[in-house]
Image 1 (cartoon, rainbow, N blue to C red):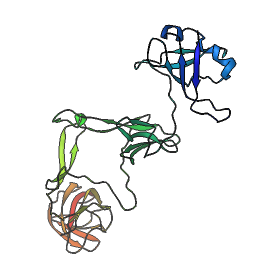
Image 2: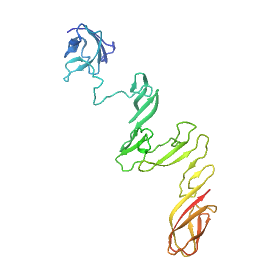
Image 3: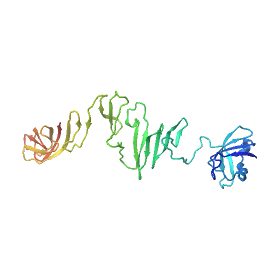
Image 4: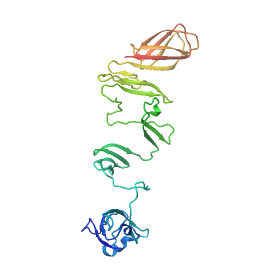
Length: 313
């Protein structure tokens, strides 16, 4: 066996071990790949071999071939072998952190698109050299999400593309957190289409939706604390607020009973009826006031409960 020469790309760098070698030999490929083939080079070049190296070998029966350096388990011998096949599996693969401009895992034709280590305990996904998406974990994480695709024209919520929570907790919410004053936006696929926030029941069937008309509508809906005086559902162009209370306690003692509710104003519309009552009585009228309203019945209903709904501008 005879090695004619070994070329090192790191000429002049002391103690450096190159990752790529160029070997010229007058041996055949079969001879080059025999066990301990590189041992003959150690007295001349020193112990410059390691398992991370690849070698471009020029053999007598083949113009060139790419082989991998293989060190014996005791570290005493060095050989050349064919690199692992594409189907080879590994327990782990370690690479550099990378960046958005040059991600650690990328594509031959798109080197600026791929995956890299973007921050502490965070995996970043870059597209065209820009960070586009990150996956992070906090200390003590026990719950996570699964992103999944959907079936064609799926009529069931479970078959739609989406995010599903999973983890050790029994009940897990999935949140979308904006930055600053930003929130969660639901956008249609085109600017001329309507935007819809759809609701599904527990069986995964369509239940209802909150829709906004096509481009040009400016009406906004907000839902503040309905228990406060300014609560209810608000339509910004024409405010309408509604509050419902079930089975409010009534002390009885007179045909006219007063109920305190800070949500009520003198111009509110109050609708209600007796749920339980000690005496038979029917509501004759309800008169709203600021912070309360009076229910007048055709008789004293006695101790009971009264359910009502208040609507106001």
